[in-house]
Image: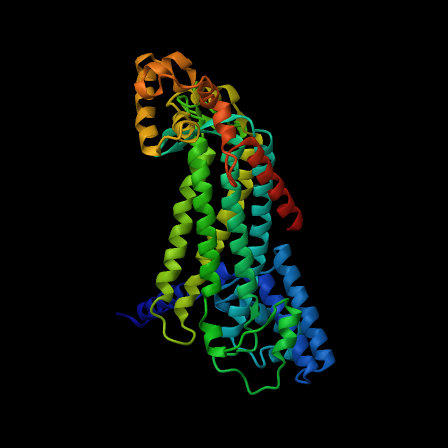
Length: 463
């Protein structure tokens, strides 16, 4: 092979290695956090006498200029700089000269990237928390309009007992409330500053880690340098929190798909969030909830990916952790847009009250009320009442009626043990009375649902 061909091959291999090794094309997402951390670091170095006031001022002004160039699109990201940290530092030195080379005193890219990434995760935890609050508020507002709208409650996808639709929606409000609380808890647990940990063992320079922690809005500095630079628990937590939230989004999306089907027709989605078929103009497809349901698998994959990366890493920092960011960036963008879209879907959906209430007349939803009546009013053992109720259900089936539509005579005819049953039973079997009978804490009665709504509203006001 000629020397020229050898050189071409070497150049090609070098380019491939640069592309493989560099993270600049995705970690540029952290430019704002990197500059914020560098400004705080320079201010602390000035306080400690490592930098002069003039040097620090030059560095801070230069960093702000770099930020402006990035945000205005003038900054050129290049593989030559490998990562966002070197890209910012090199451009800073081009702008201000020698003082720019002093910025990296008493820090390593190990604690720098840990700081940048943690700042990003903390900021996104708060923004996602705000979106979850908005979604909970929407569920509560829609629920408050439907505390008397009947819907069949289901187990095993079989009709079980009558609920009000507001109560059903509050189940999701509770899910998303827990999601919000998870992001809150993670934020508090992870709000500690890595800056000053250096490569893995701290630094001999006279630094003040509490100062940079305060400037960056952290609670305190982390306690152990080696753990800090290798720790990605905070990234795993946000991925887990997002995955759990997306699972809840997927569950309500599945119900929206089902409820909007021709067989159910419980709701109709706004035309903005459904599309017609390319060849069947009569169809209206629930594309948006289907996409929300599908994107759940995407964020699950990001969580499993990082867990797999971290599972065998020795202390301290390893290049493997460069694989921590893209999945987090992707999951964050996915949950943010998903929460915004779901919020609008719920706000704009049209509820078909009549269809929901008619569906409650299928499946003998108030059968349990007959058993409860026999236990409470006739002093029967529950198991006896259970079998009598089965006989009444069979009677209703033979008459092609729902149990709630039976007359007292028809109920008496179904079993000799209840041939003298009181006419009060007809009221007990009424579907709306059945729903409102469940007045226990957390139950579906209109009164209990309204109490839950008030509790949610109070909680939202405190957030």
